[in-house]
Amino acid sequence: MLSIWLFLIGFGMAIIGFMYIILYLNYLSIGYSFIDYIKIIFTNGECLLAIIGLIIIYFVIGKER
Image 1 (tube, rainbow, N blue to C red):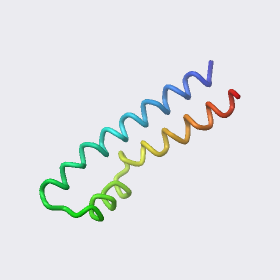
Image 2: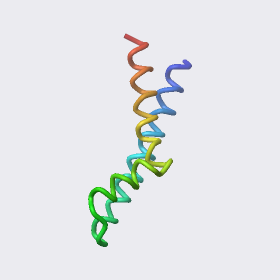
Image 3: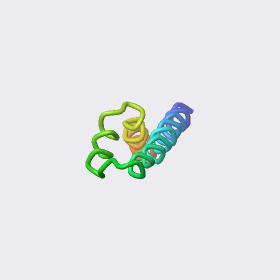
């Protein structure tokens, strides 16, 4: 039962993180370079939720196998 909750938490964190990554794509249309976009992604905490969520999902699925 704990693994289901951890999976859902990781999935939610990944969705929120990827949502912000997609939203920050708008910076490219107003003149930011791709390097600036990458810097923004790695410095904002909400974008790092995507990586943390994927790590949680990976460990939960790996534990079940």
